[in-house]
Image 1: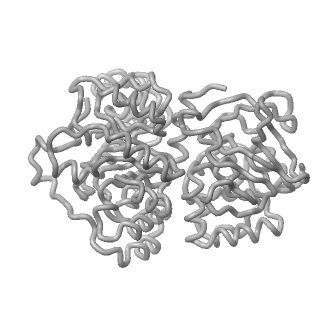
Image 2: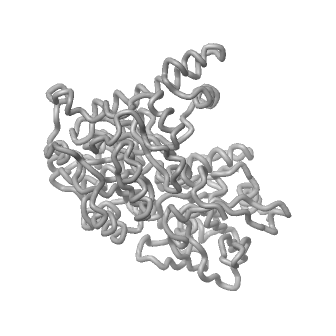
Image 3: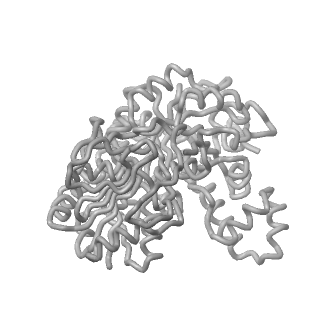
Length: 192
Length: 293
């Protein structure tokens, strides 16, 4: 399976390493033509304004939108989740509007407030998932057809799936736990 | 929920990779940087070129300026404290800046010791000229490293020298047999555990950006090809004739650093770059890079 990882800016190398560990062919994507022949796309963590700007400048945004609307599985983490959302509470950045969720950027505060927390994720089994939240966003609202995969202790929504789109407010690529990457590969090959 | 962990400190630096961190001195410049695609800004009272010109003692910026910049943009805001000045660092942490740069660009407050950075919840970035210096800073708690270059000169030569020194140091350690690692650690003045880690993994344990002298898109791409994870641009943007265009071009060149066609394209019509300084013309006591122990 060939998975592209958007490499405009951010922690793309970490995602590529995780996907390769799982036996997928992972390739960086910086230009529209590099979207050809992909079975899935990861939009990594990074600075969402920066990624969004580079996606627009190099004509990736429309192409990604088009491919995702015709069924390309997309996995967004942190900045990636913001970019997947229909609505972002901040004026910046312009999102792709693919998933029926509203997000709030930097929802927990500044870096001082970045945190780690264990998450219960029923679709991944009983073992908690190590959540790494860095200047993280949260999901404020989700449409009925969106499946919420994880919440913080206070009920805050931090992981969601809608069809072949998967969005996390945290960073599985910074942990040794490969289950979310495997879950995405399963979505991409139609097993889930 | 645990805050201030090593994972979230080093993790933020990982999120900055492939990006450009720009020096700004007011909210207007910060907005220009954000709009251009900067992944973070460094809030300062004066850019290094002006600090160099002014002479005297350079200190932490007025918190009013830092707060105004934090209000103006949604991207991470960094700020500088003097080497060893842990109270300036405490003040910056209290302000809520996202990263503290314990920087040789300001006048050192301590000529023997750096800040013990593990005491802070906010992460630190520190400068280095070689691998030994990088590993000493990481051992003290720096969650991100940048090669120093020579700030405020618009001259890339020192940045190249320092990046090559770090990368050469890594390549050398990888090829050093186990039984020679202790002597290497002694010679480098670096902790044995970190020397062993680099020997084993072939890379630094934290993200390493290039800094000090980047003035053009090609400079940024050069540093990326030499192995930088991203770049700091200090005086290079707002001391040039068209900051917005140059900022955007440097962002693009940093992402597409392996694509000469794009680098050529974005280098067109940027106007005058910042005036450059020949390092050999700078009296040795005015050089910033040797500050750091």
